[in-house]
Amino acid sequence: MNAQRIQQLSSKYGCAAFVASTVPNVYYSTGVLSLGQKFILGTKVFSIVIPGDPPRVTLVAPVGEADLAIEEAREGVNICPYGHFVIEGQDIGKGGTDGCLSQVLSSSKLMPPVDVLVQALQELGLQGQKVVVDEGGFTPDEWQRFTGTFAGNVVPGFAIWREIRMVKTTSEIRHLKRAAEITAAAISHALSEVHEGMTEKELVAIYEKYLLDNGAYPAISVILFGEHSAYPNGVPGNRRLQRGDIIRFDSGCVYNNYYADLARNAVFGLPEPEIRGKVSTYHAAMLKGVQAGINALRPGVRADEVFQLIMNTVHENGVPHYQRTHCGHGIGAELYDQPIIALGNKTILEAGMVFCVETPYYELGLGGIQVEDTVVINEEGAEYLSPPSSVLSVL
Image 1 (cartoon, rainbow, N blue to C red):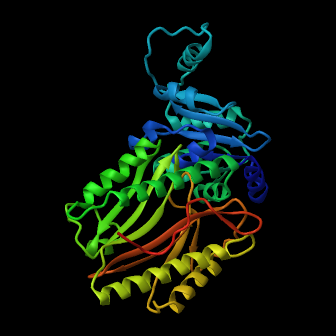
Image 2: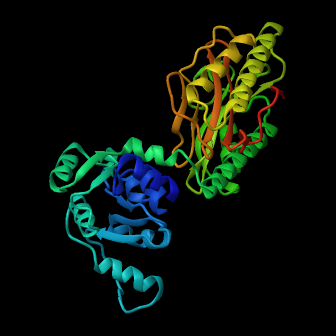
């Protein structure tokens, strides 16, 4: 968690604390990725962050995940459990993790989770204070009850949490770099195994096995052949690879709970001359667009300025009809972090922001051509976290 960023935005919004209620924000603030919150709809997990050096952090979570919280929470996180769960052999006098788990289990409150959150805020002296609260994890009824029960100035904060997470820490950048490296290597490995007649599903299996063998988990695996590659979110199926096919990877992974998102293209054998020229021109234009965008990334530049430069570059290099709503996005504990490189986005870029810069092009009957690289902004400009894209590969 970026303690300095928390402090800055606390001053900007005049708040005494931040409350998280959604998976990426709770994980970001505590180090705990709740299985219940991720996989069981309706599970409530909250974190309370009081700015400071270091920040004071409280985790409100189901007591059935007390073991997970103890093992995963960052040092200093106070665990406030709710509900009932049985683990035999509890002994609060025991030392080590077992004793800590016994203490947490025995302290659980048999109250609705929102009420436990309110009580925790009150015990932290935040009653009557201005608190930024991520509304994303509340139902409308829960939100109404919370804002009615907690006698404070509650500011909806889902977007503010995203603003906090826009600037990455050194540790986050390290995870994102490794995720991008694993993804790029998995794509290269998969392309080395390509052969005529294989199915899209078979190539996905090769790609995803490489991820798993190297400590990452699949996130997106849009790997498509030929005309099917024009489908932006196409589902890899039983289409078999033929000579002249475009192969499009829009793929990524999760490494230490941080995402990668890269795109690469190859052509299997040479297509017909007319198609070959079109694909070559389009890929070169998309590549130049991404390179121009990356070269423009630096502190003080607006996101929409980068978007317009990318679009102009593609238009000037042989694809004047190219249209996009965005040409990249932040990445981190979410696949799509803020800010988005889009028309009208006036966000001022800062050092420490990590971007996936991309120029996807989809044409029915032809296929999909997509270049996407990952970079971090530093004081001088942008530094690649993924190996940079290059010319179109012919296999």
